[in-house]
Length: 348
Image 1 (cartoon, one colour):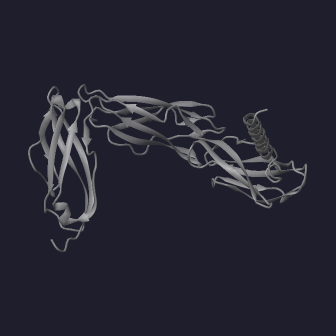
Image 2 (cartoon, rainbow, N blue to C red):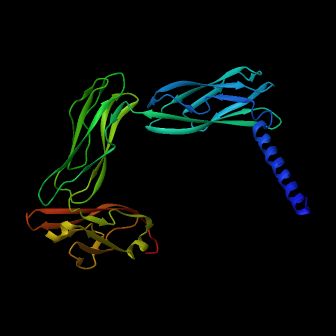
Image 3 (tube, rainbow, N blue to C red):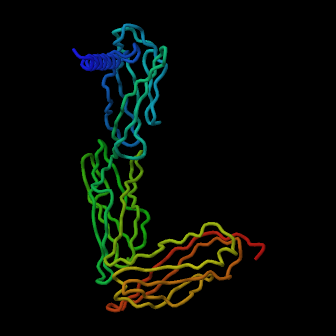
């Protein structure tokens, strides 16, 4: 055998020994690393309703040849309360990790890890992946509905969802107590027996010309779920989009506010058939110039803050831009909310 072949053989043997050593280390590990068999390895808990609590158990079996002493068990989520029945488990014996899951206020699928800590030369931690579902007693067929009113044709936008009682007791529902102007929401039935469903119908009248998003709340008789929420998105045909849609100046000195110019632009297909009539402004705003039309679907406005109010004032008003729809002769109002607080400016 040549020297080169001998060297190659030696290296191959050393590599094989290294692989076997690593395998043995992983397979056998330290005594405490394999001390516990967790049953099940991943805990998929029974679903709970919002506000409901449900117990669960996980078995911890000592598969080592020595006693295992527990230092504690922890959960990342406050909705999980856990403890271990025995402080010590002997070889071959099994103890139980008991816990209680409480459904928090939000429905969905959730994940966490339980950490079981045992004593040893180095305290070892056993992670137990945990998963559970939180459900609502009244299920909604869609989280959001989209309404498409059409100002040009004076047509309202409508949509509906189905509400189903997934619980084992009757639940009473009421129509919303408050709704944004122009929005309607009506329930087909106000009492749902277990398993029963009812339709909730929504509509937005044709006065909407800008997009909007609202939360509609149907009050519920169940003490743990006081309302059923449905998100309503209004997306008018040919919608006019405002940039910025909301103006919030925050808190700033009057002197600084007087140096500012506010630019507002409107964009949308509906503007092709509309003509500008007027803009209604709070006393502390004035127009810098007439609105510009960079294109048939764009309008640009510029405003300046004037000295019409003293410092220490809470700004809460709106700009109202009025247009006339030429085909129908109807007026449409586009609103831009204003907010902020002006500090006293002693130097001004």
